Length: 427
Image (cartoon, rainbow, N blue to C red; front, side, top):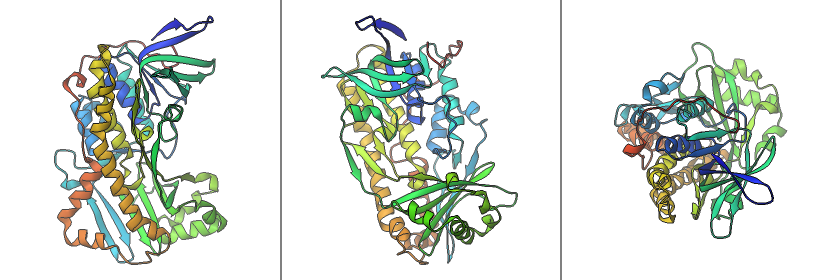
């Protein structure tokens, strides 16, 4: 990363690729571009990745990707929780929704790994290359737009406002992307009739394990086993948090204990409403993911519902597809609009297909349920899957592998690491 004068005595930094956001999409792309020899800067507005209730699912396709990149042996050493199937409990019994043991290939499971561990792993791998930098405590605020193309981005840190010029700017800064907003990219928004309340409860020896949804009397609670605790998702109707809060914390704890009796002895761990985070469920996607000089990937290009936990998978697959198409032309100074357009073309089908599936499941099953229309009737889909268990492979594959898994081109696969001292806060 170099500096250059931009007039009036002011200097702007310059790099080949500037990536806003060090989430799964941004960090995977940054690491892959660094492998390909592209000078890359990733900007992250926080000092670290330690935030609760971020997506922690590592899919079978991600495990395969790590193997293809020569990183599996190191990656598997990170502490993680393996899940071999997803079940749903109703008043009629327990039903298997997805059986990952039926997946093709060697990775017949999904895992839960704290996202901060995953991101730190990618940072450590990327920092082996001298052409990579991550700027922490650096909040991206807007694109730099000369009218015809995006030429970089603006960001602020403890020293004030700065500009970073780049041959390509990538928006990987999430569902509230400052880059996509200031670039005036339009999106198609699909309504959602539900929100999710997230919280944690302690885990004890002898607890039933796995990832299980509980459907009963118009309510849905999903519990996800982690190594040291349970992550719990409590589904409410859209903007229904205030209604739940109005009933009081004692009512909430009592209701949770009735839905998941084995957790009844620890619902008191929800000490206040501050222990509960509200996820505003939404689904949208950009009409166009790019402009000259700018590419959007991950949630910045398409916000996914948390249904089936596929948002991270799509974000990582976006990053691989983007790196496959832009790494070499970007490194060689030959990147053009066709390369950017090809990324969207490649990823449109799995994005649209997955969103349609999520909207169908929400509209036909989950939203009527949280409106109180489901009562105690077990959905027909669960009954069919129990009678024909081979069909459990279909939902499992959709979640764990995706509709179009990506594979890195040879130039992005394992290469000799170029070690250097790390620099994570500026030059």
